[in-house]
Image (cartoon, rainbow, N blue to C red):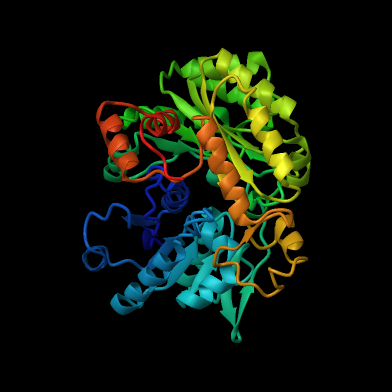
Length: 464
């Protein structure tokens, strides 16, 4: 059977820039390949009121995707899951069609969010195959059973089926997206996104990627990746961002992907997340030739003792080398730092700042405190302390700080570093950042804007 499925992206966050809902596009591609008709309702760019969309499209099923639970910023602690609850309440008033939840945010708290929303079903983790199977069962009037990752209420309790990792054939086909939405995101952020692989084999103590995607990596055909880049260019895109948790987990994969881009003769600049380890001059040069312009390094600390406690399995020497390789190829870069996590002390903070002064270039984006998510090694560590009871509801943001430091001490140290070095960005930018970003986009600037933000901090007084 062919059904009509309304896909709702509930994300409305636009900092540091609005992000196109790529996961929903992959689900949409799978549904269309199965013969279904789909329509999108993007809460960040609604083209019509929800009630009007429901009247016109008359969906048989409604899928809602929650990308993030919160902003992982200790000072602000803004949450996003409330929007999911609001949209589910409104949909319940407007239609009796089954509501199906998914997305990375939902997958971290499936039992709680299914209960809070009153939705009919949810899917944990990869949703392409599972959603097609779920709809097929519901079309036939069957009670869904045995579907990997299915979340449903049975006999008064929420039951979650075990997941299985999907091969790239299930999700790795070239992605299509609604032209009007693509145009919107290109206008407001200058970029669309590409995924080249799933799965993360690394052991960062706080990270949910191994839970969301599994530890075994599954890589797309490089030609399919190149086709996504070409499609972005055809849509008028001037920049692409590779959303893999770590693009360079396999040097062979990086090489094959870049060579596919070069064979296409694509001139589209792009950025990605890189692990500052295992990089060589030849590999960085190849990425730059293929269009790499920006790198976001998952650095986390500039102190070896803290890096070991975080489970990073690389050293500051690796970071220094990676930064130099990026500088040599004129690739702009930034280092994300999480200050105050396991193993951090006042001495390691000072050591990290001293080491940062040795970097050739790059911006440093630092945040105090480490957001705790269920099931991570950090969660187990946090539960050993008196401040995080075993039954703590982590849906509301809870942050870990080393017993050696208070949140105020970590924040004060970071602010002191920012006063000593304009490359350290700590305080959240004010309204002037949005004004600057809009002007830069209007002038044709593409990609991340951290370097401009650092310039803004140099010319404007910063709060203490």
